[in-house]
Image (tube, rainbow over all chains, first blue to last red; front, side):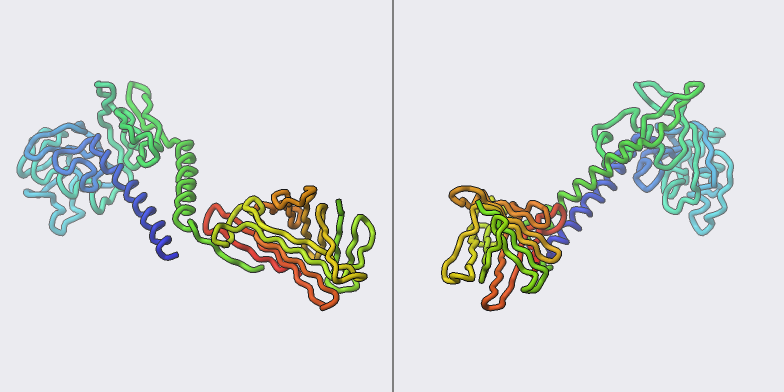
Length: 229
Length: 148
């Protein structure tokens, strides 16, 4: 019996790992720079100034955006690295761009910084992010064209994954499965599509059925319980 | 075809046996069904479909040494809180044509054992039914229900 229980536990663990890894693999579609493109080190997928390594702004969201709640995304006041690197976690100034140090391009809103940019380690959305709500306007690529799009942070931004869907977005193992494709609003700006409740329900039923079959297969095959009434 | 009805409320005074509507003064009624087993003799799903054997006899008070067959026909047994119906109307009393109902539920394909022994001479009563209950989740169950 213990052996069967371990079997079920292993399967559940495997399923959990699958759920955890697939989204992580998919995340590089948005934003990010070279190092640990967004998502690699726990970042959200709309990193501002998602820079590359030395002074080049790479692809992603290079347009100006704004954060609520003051993460450690921009406004670096230190020379090397962020000002929050050594014990000054809450001293992020709210200026756009990098205020000094290496690699800062000096162009107002463009994050072309190198060292200490917000996209390296510990940028907004990495460990210990203090902001609960983030809104940004960025670029959404679909059909080879780019459109302005609103990103609100959180799971809802998975809606934008449907711009270039991969096959596994159609499976319940990927978060994009639970969101509708983005919709175009006024002025040609895209908004997240919202939760696909039908898919959510469907996958719930599916997972329950799979779990039931697995439990049946691993817990009772060849076993009979005797009871007296 | 016999229509045999056995009724009891749990004591000898309330116990009756009738055959085709007439009293059947009996010293003993013995019903034994054995079914629902795999090739190793262990309980398995399938019930009567797996094959088996059955005996159902009554020894009358007039001549206790002679066994009288109940089947082919229908045997209805009413116990306090339980009802068992065994039916086999096949002329040759082929086992595969046996139907078993327990509390109005067809358990033909779940029956493993049924033993009913009402022995007035030796003052012995026993009624036990064993059913194989397959479950979707968890292990299958072999339920032994003591009726009397």
